[in-house]
Length: 160
Image (cartoon, rainbow, N blue to C red):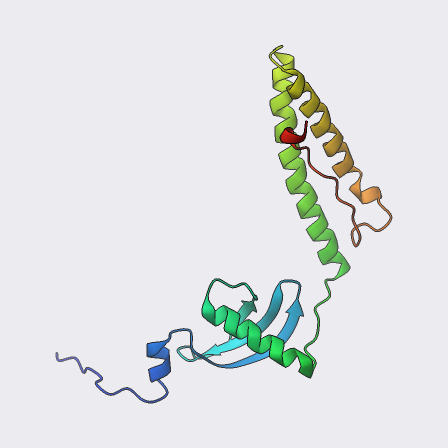
């Protein structure tokens, strides 16, 4: 069976072959903290693709889409405001990650103390990491939680 090979390219297909990130349209633009969420119609795709356009995107097409979204912002691009549930989820996720990190550090220094192999710096760091862990656990007690949080600063071994 013989295969039919297409030898002619239409004008509409050419930009997608030359640049696979060529796009025809951007819609549904919403400003978010890191840039713009939007829907982009790339020439080589049938429908719109959800896209996060950031000013410091590593790809040129991402920066170009961001620039176009920013230019349209004067036309009334809505800002996205997280819900209370999203604020709470983000705070809890960060707190959980920081507690996991602090628990690991406390365990490391506590083990050194327990086997009588801790230096003065190890003992100081153990106390600092425990205080950090207590401060993290007290975050929900802050008046503005989860909307306005004063995060504790993790201990720095170099500073001790």
